[in-house]
Image (cartoon, rainbow, N blue to C red):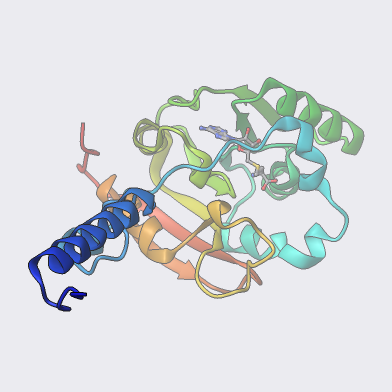
Length: 250
Ligand SMILES: C[S@@+](CC[C@H](N)C(=O)[O-])C[C@H]1O[C@@H](n2cnc3c(N)ncnc32)[C@H](O)[C@@H]1O
């Protein structure tokens, strides 16, 4: 009785065939990998464009007026950083229920005004209820769009954006419009939950931003960083001015 030799041609071909079938099966089962996922190639290292977060629905507006927010987030430090004066015209973009607009209105006083802008009419209805209840008379609700906050050209001394920029679905036209509404010497105060570290770990990661993300996008849009503060417990504060003569890319 003859036994096939371990390296006989017939044994080799059977072994090779089994190997090829196994490799084919493994390839077929491997999950499709994202082209930029950790291959170590230059393409993998290239920064990816930031995806905007979803707009916070007005049905969840209670969260903006939640108990303990003022104690935890220290809005008085934001107001201080804004360097407000009585009589100033201020715009809050993405004002929501007016948690900040109402506080600003008290500082700029009856000679000043606050344009409280949002894209959800229901948010503005809630804002009107809060301002009426608190007897705040100098808040002007403004219904804007995803590309136009509908603010007076060169008519605003301070623009405040708290926890909203990362929700802009179309940031470029919004940044151009913000530049256009600033009065000479006007500044923008931008507040975003920190992506770095864990001080904002209670906030969904899609609603947090890094210093690098903010600076790259705002600098490219023609803004200059005047100052950055890390005094808030969980949020970055950026103060920007518009670069004279600079226009955002078309
Ligand atoms: C998370 S809430 C913050 C509200 C407010 N700034 C605060 O801190 O209490 C975000 C708000 O921004 C508004 N928003 C989102 N995208 C906007 C845009 N492109 N222009 C104006 N408002 C916008 C939403 O409708 C929502 O009211």
